[in-house]
Length: 192
Length: 192
DNA sequence: TATTTGACTAATAAACGAAAATAGTCAAAA
DNA sequence: TTTTGACTATTTTCGTTTATTAGTCAAATA
Image (cartoon, rainbow over all chains, first blue to last red; front, side, top):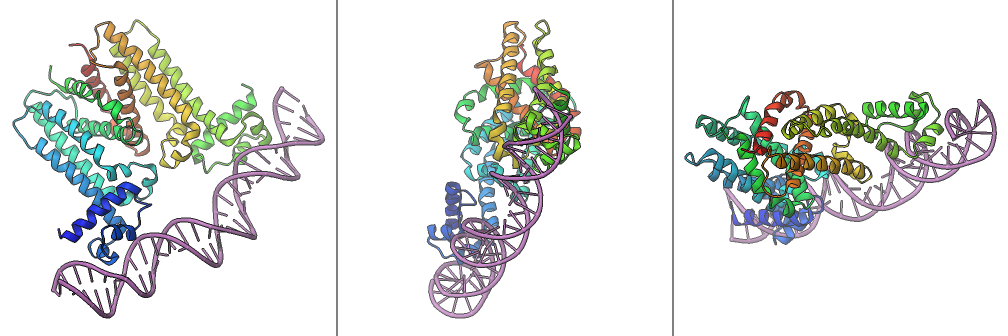
């Protein structure tokens, strides 16, 4: 990625993060990055696409961090799940542009970001399913029925926490008990 | 409650349930109930208050059903939690006016229904906390740290399921695995 | 050739008033 | 005390204008 494009992307990320999607204009981003608006449009074909790339870059960072957790084939599946839950919360807490997509005002043009988030969801679900299956195969875990449904439910739970934690300011209060909660989940899925 | 008031309330419930809050007019409700609009306003001081009572009646029904689960002091705490989760899902699935409040369009005037839903949340959290504490005291459950936080997390999880299940039509697909999921939760919180 | 520029145009949002729809009132009647 | 429906008050909708912002492009630059 060219230095100009990089500059524009990080400036966009900062500005969107500060004022939100609607209250940030393309002029403002270009001006902040000390570039002409034409350059902005040369690299990013629309405001929506630009925001999409901003959110996507946050999700790609999360993905990258998670890959290093999921990829190690020799770690106990329970430790992987545990590390996954912790890391996901930490990264999401600093992904302010992703957090913006959680706001109700956003649901209208959700359609547009839909596939980016859906793709991440599917990837996560797939990774969790894989690790759960490995855990079952290794006799570490015990999961009656369809394993992928548990993966889905875990994701629903983690995503359900996003609004209270990141939008309703409960992060500091609840995160302190998160380790205990993870302990319960692990115990719940462990083979007796 | 007078027959007229009762009639108006059930008609309102049906009409709101069919067309939603915004697309239902007070004239329509009065007409459907074969009453004058004045009567409607004699019993319910505003449209918002009326809808509030409709939602409240659904929540009161849920509460009533849950009371009979929570109140029995001699049942194993794990069975209570299990029955609670199942019953809550079942009742919520038929509480169509409550489901309307889950829609993003609703967040604006959420403030108005806020206290009704908040009160129910607090009641549920309180009941769960109570039963969890009893379970710990009876050596049925093992919960490190603040017990009330687990109650809160369980509620967040159940409420997190509401949107995918009731608004995104995943109810039929996911509900079939709900028993297994409950099993995991119970195992996770059980004393070893 | 690939990239950058800023004046330019097109599209969208905000502001406003008029008309229509709907919320809410009240004196009279039951 | 409760019910009624004609009535008023408010809110929403629609069309129009204005302002803002998204998006384009020919020329310049590297």
